[in-house]
Length: 237
Image (cartoon, rainbow, N blue to C red; front, side, top):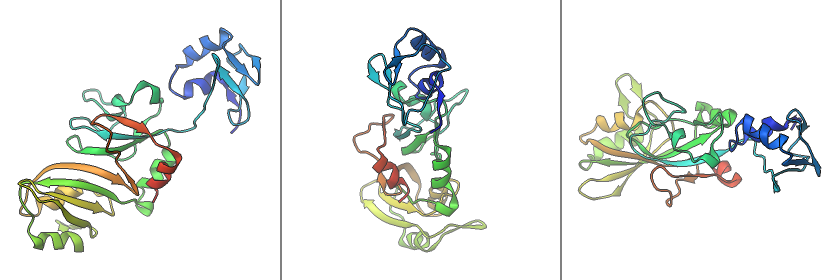
């Protein structure tokens, strides 16, 4: 990458503000290629220059990709004047200035939300041209009649709109049955609208995968983790 001001580079990683970065630099705690620098306007390239801050190597990441297990009652937004957002739940060590959720889950829907600061990547995985499959667990109050399941599998109509065929199977046969549903498109409230057209009522909805990447089962509601390069690649699959 091109050389950037060192204060901007340090602040871009989210751990420190621009003013905090300036204080660290002016205090002589930043070394570039073995030399102490005290000018905030000094420029460096993290791909080619050795940057050490307070004795630790500066590990620069251009973008960050975060998997969150979204809890109920939290909105999928970067900020909201009244509601708690998914970005509010991101721990400080992962926070970046431009984080946003790539795609939305309703306030009462839980599960896998991708949070990133990479706009181009988000556009790629959300665009209809490259739309990635998303899989959900839908809990209902009763077994859905087979005739409705076949409509979902063949392409169900909702008013003037027709949904693409979806994969649906009974996942848990209990008093409140759970269905595993994979969508090949992302229309507004699609699963809620599909189930509203059946004999059943939707009780709960959880997203469990995006592309070939499944929600980490060890994440409790509200917890998140940074994705590896391999996991990011799986999102495109």
